[in-house]
Amino acid sequence: MIPVVSAEVQEGTTGLNDNISDSANELMKNQDIQTIIGAAISSERIQVDEKNQTFLNLYESPGEKIIKGMKTRAYSDSQITVVLSSQGYSWDPKTGACWKGTAPTEAELKIINQIRGKNYSPFNRESTLQKTALATTSLRQEYRQMRTTSGTTYFGVYDYMKPGQMVTSSTGTYQHVVTTHVGRKTSSTTECWVEAGVADSVADPQRRYFTYDNDEGGWSFHGNAGAADVSTYQIYVSDTLESAGYKYNVWINGNWVRTEHLAFRQNYVDQANEIWADGTNAFSSDTSITNFRDSYLYHNNGYSWWATNVPTDFNSVGSRISQSKVVSGNAYDWQMWIP
Image (cartoon, rainbow, N blue to C red; front, side, top):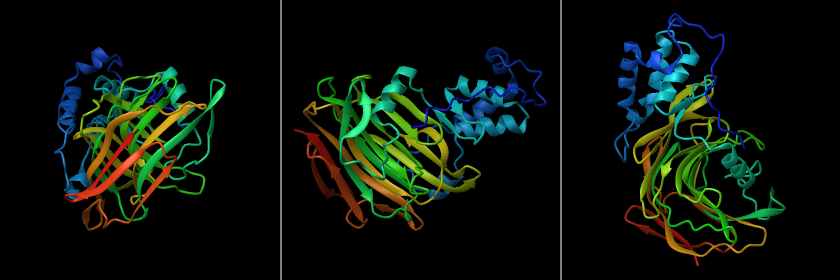
């Protein structure tokens, strides 16, 4: 598990405008900065259900626009960090990755790492007890997963997801995650993927939207999610190849939250419902419905609705999560619950 990468002040980085104070108040008074921010924030939101791949390939996120605009004017990395932070953004100066949201606290990250630690992978699922330590016991995981059989066809996904109640308890389900992954291993031992979804746990008993990249940027939270909220999740890997990989963007409900990189443009795509319990604790009953529906996948010829025409594996470990999957309209309507 890679911790959240916070943009660091780059001591010793200089530029033509380094005479401007790095203090937020002074920097934010600068008209150049106000112009850059004004041009950037207009791209925070895109049209929901955007299928135009020309637009998606050319899209520049507000974080990118601020970084590019300030670098063009020779501002330093430390000054860029100040301005990005004023808008709730973070970045990695080494790769140009940028994202929006709130990082986990140190205590939250410790719990996350205990549950979804170094052995977690959306590609190779464990079918036995996960041996990460939580106090003096271990966690075990059950899940259901809907995954494309091809990792060399699709470079993005758009789906609708409702998380349900995601009941958690110290004596039952310790953590519950409903998520969409996009990625592919670069080798048998090297992971490279991004995900977006909703997470809830005993340590943080409020459903929250989140995104995560396993090797760039780490975890980020994007506000609270209602049990009955049907939200859209869009992950698109562009045709722009940078030094860190193919640039991708993530939007939740049409709002930009992440611009980072994957090793490949074409990747596996999966949707998953994952639960963990501590020791021998029984998983909590949760009869509310978790639902993925109306999903489609981007590819070279446009997009395909995710239905029986897309070769798909339905995988699972354990039997606690019940499911119903039918094609409704154009795509799968996949519902899950815990009796």
